[in-house]
Length: 198
Image (cartoon, rainbow, N blue to C red):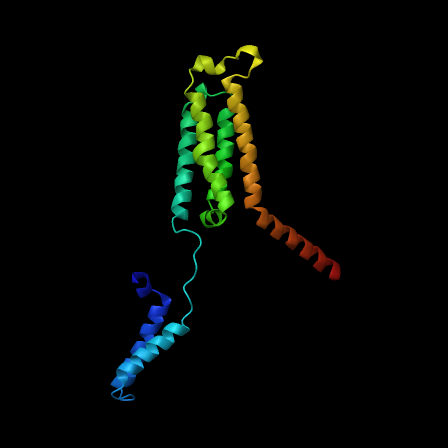
């Protein structure tokens, strides 16, 4: 009910009601003025366009901003512990964060695609932090040590995980920008066809 007070339909109805009141004050309508005011309110409210449907949450911008802040914080923590991290892992974390940050810089579009939203959120909030935190929680001497039986070291595991996460981030970005790529391809085709017809 409270939402209706600020709706387009209520505002249009109020305009109709004011017109009915003005007609009464100018003497156009007599004693039936309450019916005229109510009738004009109803007509104007019914003719008003419906409220716009918003499928994207108003919190999408805030959520994307928080995810970007979380990624920045993670990159900052990893950079601060660069000496403790395997070589090239810091760059790997940065590259993943950059891809995700690009997607999050368009929050409305990011939130409008639930699959991409879920995948980006999972990567930024769970997968990437978990990989880095698990590694950093190991003692440094153990993390670099090769395990018995030729098993990969914790450093190797982290590098493999970051490579897999970066591949996944790029796959998500391809889905996210797929429409833009199609639009660009269509425009190229149009320009070629136009050039051939001249």
